[in-house]
Image (cartoon, rainbow, N blue to C red; front, top):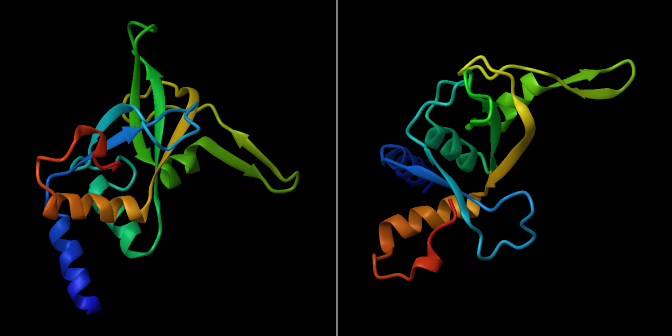
Length: 156
C-alpha cells in the first residue's frame, strides 16, 4: 500500500502546477480570501534548485506542511516599483536571520535577493501550504468537474 502512494505522488510531480497565494497580512478569517498572486510551481526554487511542486510534495510525503516565503525588492532603476519573489521559507530564513548564541539573540539581517542582487525590503510574508490543502488540490484535479462554483476553488 505504501508503494502505491509513493508511485502516485511521483506521478503527481509530472503535472503542470501553479500555487495560488491567498489572503494577506490582515486576514483573520480563512474564508473569502482574495487571491494575491499566482506562483508557477514548475519553476525551480532558487536555493534548492528543485521545482516548487516537488518541494511541496516531498514535504507532504514526510507528513509536514510547506511554508512559502514572499520577499519584496525594488526595481534597480525605478525604486517606486516593487517586485515579489517566492522561496522556500526554510532556505530564505537561513539568509535573513542570524542567531547570536552567547547573548541568545536572533537578528534580521540586511541581505540581498539572490535573483536580482537588490536589498530585500519590508516585511517577509509567510504562506502555509498544508498537507490537507495538497490532498484537496489533488482530489479536485482528478475528481471535480468544471461545473463547480467559483467560490469553491482549491486553496493551494
